[in-house]
Image 1: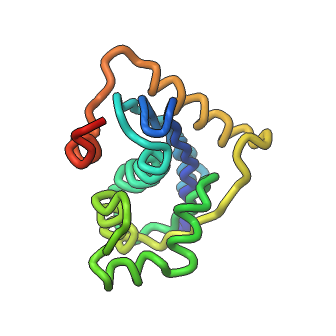
Image 2: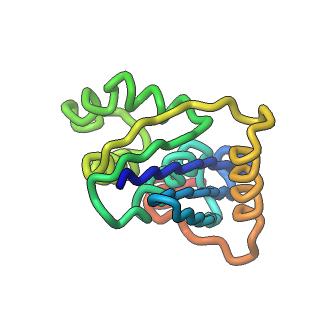
Image 3: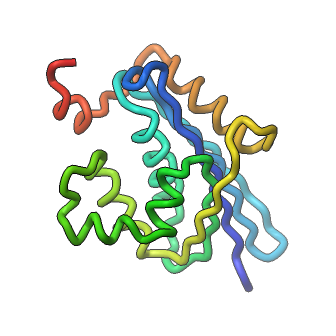
Length: 160
């Protein structure tokens, strides 16, 4: 039986940096059984790129069975190009020298090697209904009253 897993993601911030959030929509097809999962969370002070990365990471971390075939759809060229052009491995080799979001890139690399993942870029705000849905989720998450703290980002930027 060949499982099909699709993860759609988006991240946003109101101000960059500012309050932000991510949205994730996961589709899993196992034989003729189909399931969906929706995830979203907001943070009080973060960046758009951090939320884009976190959306992908959280989506992948929800797939508990290892060695799955997964397609990730994102409107972030920052993520797609970093993986498909192998920039991330050069960064790792150089200990992420002068790179931002090191904590998240390391976390993504860890989960990336547990599965067989294809990244697919889709143009944002272009009437792709699931990407638009994830965008709305990320905005909704950033507008919550009790936003989480992105401790790594806030500790690196104490003079905000």
